[in-house]
Length: 226
Image 1 (cartoon, rainbow, N blue to C red):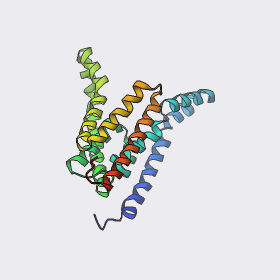
Image 2 (image 1 turned 180 degrees about the horizontal axis):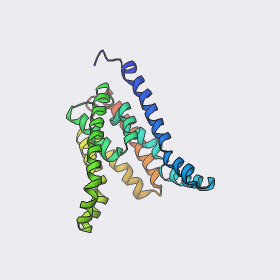
Image 3 (image 1 turned 120 degrees about the vertical axis):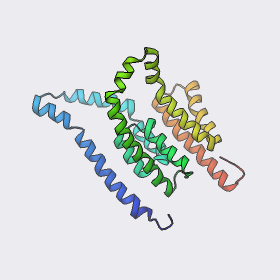
Image 4 (image 1 turned 60 degrees about the horizontal axis):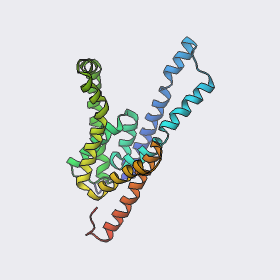
């Protein structure tokens, strides 16, 4: 990819298309609301809308910053736009992008990683679309058939299992960072009264800071492995 102009051939068109598609999705998200208002005359009061928005912002506001920053190294630029448009980032897009980088032995944050992760995420979106269509007809019926203990296990442990697999995948490559990434959130959870959103922010940026220090030390002294 030595002749690949990253700025001209990749970043500029990706940003242009990504902004257009995300803005379109944001505008189209209001169509059900407009339908209820213009057809049925249903509209909540301004105070209720602000109250509802405030509750959502308090619950998920931290993720507006944390997720794009923490996932960017794996998702890449195009992958970030695609993932935030299609959803299921932590439990599907991120693992698929990470696996694509792993099987191709591609270093995260490189030009090659941008292309590889984008292809992995594109494949996951197509597969996910087919899977969701089937699950809409089959999955719900199967969950109802399963005994409650199995159905509850699917609901409670699927996402943690995926995160654990991704963590293990990267822990093999970067054992020191794995220890740091494990100790910081566990320590903060056990010994501080931080709320969940603050714990996430501190864990993500704390790990990033220590990772930067370790990589700088490794660059100066190759014997220091990350």
